[in-house]
Length: 335
Image (cartoon, rainbow, N blue to C red; front, side, top):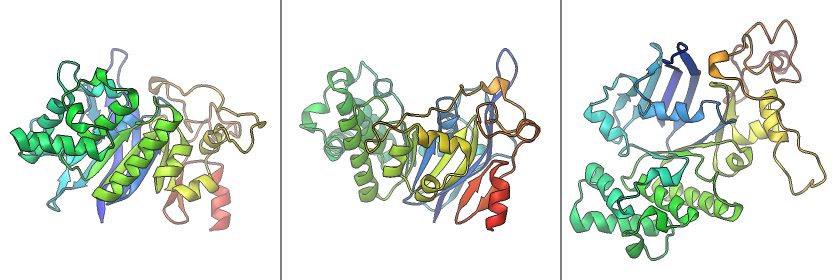
């Protein structure tokens, strides 16, 4: 059953220099109980894309007229998210109650002047209708579920009293305290060491299985996506350039950007192999190149084609898609 459907998501911001479009023509579907990985460098538009799903963008942001965001709520009703007004009750229910979010920096997710339990119980009161002892017991239960030791004491502590890994677990507990059907995890392991990162990934896999929720997992690391997601969408400069099942995309990447990200992953099996970073830097959305947005950094780009014409979306295989001029002839021959 389809839980979320996004069609032609385009977002523009008003700036002093004029309108800027950091996300352009993004489309994807997410089935219940599945995990979609969003991959790309910083500035690719991953966080902006997912914030739009909860209408958390600032007032200067504007969705394109043909953008469609459809979400199936707990009652089985289709919510047209892009049409919800900022003060709508349905939008308040969506944020936290239907869709939970883990932001990049756990310290920014907690207020320094309130205890962790106080902030968790606020969400529980709003979305679960529990108060007093019942809300506190649920907060303690969620802290225990994410593996925090002595949760009855942690509930009365402040965020600065916890280590990085403990704070991240507490953030996950807060995001899940209202039993959302969809969890957006925005680079939840980036600031953690490798051991804690593995623990958090294992925790999230277990919680997803236990709670039956769907997940959108944002990262710049394809190695992490291989461990946690079933589908992957590779973003570059606000556009999805390749999408498909994780195993298929990692085994046979069709876009030069995807291949570049894979070559930049260090491997313990080949310690003497040099890393090959993607050359150059991602352009600013205010200076978007003509033609293919990746052609300024692509070592395979063809002058007169890639720098002039924007590649069309090519679908192939089972649920796969790529936007690349170089992939079109090969895919046509294999069809």
